[in-house]
Length: 196
Ligand SMILES: [Zn+2]
Image 1 (cartoon, rainbow, N blue to C red):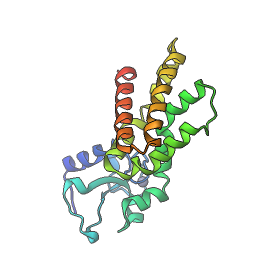
Image 2: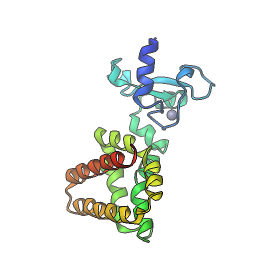
Image 3: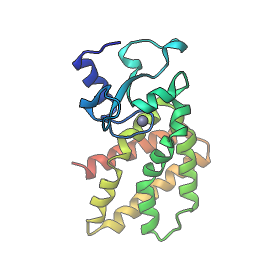
Image 4: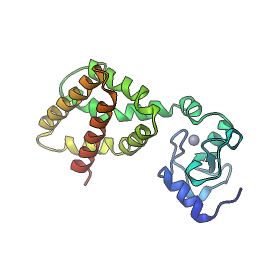
């Protein structure tokens, strides 16, 4: 089906111009231009054959190859195949990893394992969680860089580490939604404090 320029822009911008299946950057101008760099299609997130609609809330940008590979599969099937969650969850741990390093703890320490597991199961399994990860994981390296440039970086990481331990303890007590809220607030505060 044909889309107006305006519709295409709004679909493209929905995901900051990244493929919603593999997270590669797409080129706005190379819509439906097979072979061109960042060429993309409009993907019906829920396939038409599975009862999906042409409504805007079902339309997302995807590489042409991802779109064709997806066919009638569920988006999560293709995301798994493309390593989408791997990228997200590794980057999602960026700040925790920085805290852990500043504490001299190993990369496979208990806290990181619990948080990774929580992210790969609970958070990535719901839409709000994915939205949060999307919103957070691109700026995460910049946040760490900004903290590292401060004289009191170690102090900041110590404070963050206390908060991370709080989140881990909520997860240990199976208080998953509380842990999720706690984590959302932490991300929001970090963005507010270090990205402005
Ligand atoms: Zn893709």
